Length: 617
Image (cartoon, rainbow, N blue to C red):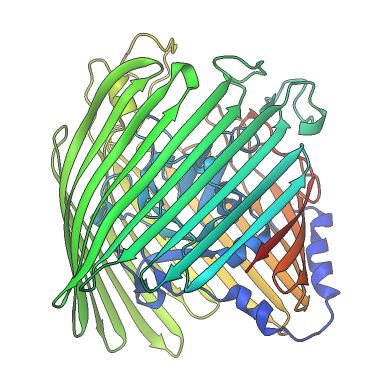
């Protein structure tokens, strides 16, 4: 057993041993039905079994069964991902997908870019509430051949709920520890003429102090509830709108809007700090998309415009946006399917730390994808050309193959190149030294069947953008960032298992081994060398579900060298169907009250309790 699993954690096995043998009802079994459609691998809907990429899909049923409330909670229990957060809910969060930096993974909401060009951390994962999420698609490995910049490590697409035939909707209310209140409501309507949907959610908590003492300090080891510091609260309100109309001649109009308003109280510079201009961050993010699709002969055509705007008050204010116009055509031709497209992007920063910059760059791009099925083989290809006005043009590609070997056993392999343009923030804080885009070459090899998947991955990154360690004064730009010479290497393997046992248990187990080193062979911080995730669901009747899940983080250290790994966190969720459409639930986070830190000096929750109701109709 890996270091960090104490004897009491064997209660997981004890729970499994006490399960009585009862039939798994059809309703409970449906919880684990995987949605078979994936849209993130090549920008169009395709069957999951036809995708050669390394894909993980998290469904709405899994989100409900585990009681996950925010995106970081779900990703912590996902194989191949490392999450580090500087405090409780709403605090800044970093994602390391197979070891690559947070800004090297493209985050999308309904296909709209959520990576903030005015920051360093890519997408603001901590802001994404899961109450209106239908599924999360995680595509691992370089995806620049399809999605362009920021997709060097992979793509995470959060797909929100949409209208089905007729009228549907629901609501949810929850409360618990740290004076936490959370609620949501949604309504969807679909007819032959079109559809409409609206979803609103609210999350607020008093939280706890974001700062909790670094290793070596007297306060270190004190649990969040016992810290003698002020609480750092969090509020988040979201609204999502979707609408569409069926026009003449197989033509459809569609539009969507996502609005996020949040307030985060935090501690800065590694110390407890009272509320003030530099410790309260007000966030206003807006994503919208309008488009039209049509059928013309053998081609499915689509033209859309989308925009993401970001505004946060932190350090005097950061504001910027990403605009994109794209047209594409998809063709089916017997044994295959092809897609071609072209687009324009503008990345813009209005201000940085209160200083008006009005700077940015543009990109024009072309892309093509193709997929063929021949008996037991699937071949996929993608090619993309990006032409930036501030950097050299770049051609990226992705090649994949998948083969049925024997019965349900399959093998797959992918090779791809990646491309990551510097953020406007990085360019702004370099006074004299120019920055080149990061470039990568990666591949993976997979073997799997109905319940087991083995993956080996490797990614080599050149011109990795890193930073010096000057005495930041936030007023005078300097050469803070540079392209590290040489090649940084990220490689490892993953094992994923999911299986029903005795017709009443569903178990999931994931293991990740990662080696992440810079060009000098020095191990990179904040990436766990080993990670284990686990989940066990028991269905004693069609009205009850008991889920115990968690993750073990192995050897990991912070950028200052402090050890922040070797711990296990276990969560418990109990659900009961009071009526046909109403479910009550209880969630206990950090069941065994484990003390740990994901970043040196920043707190994590104690054992905490939440209770709620959700309904659907």
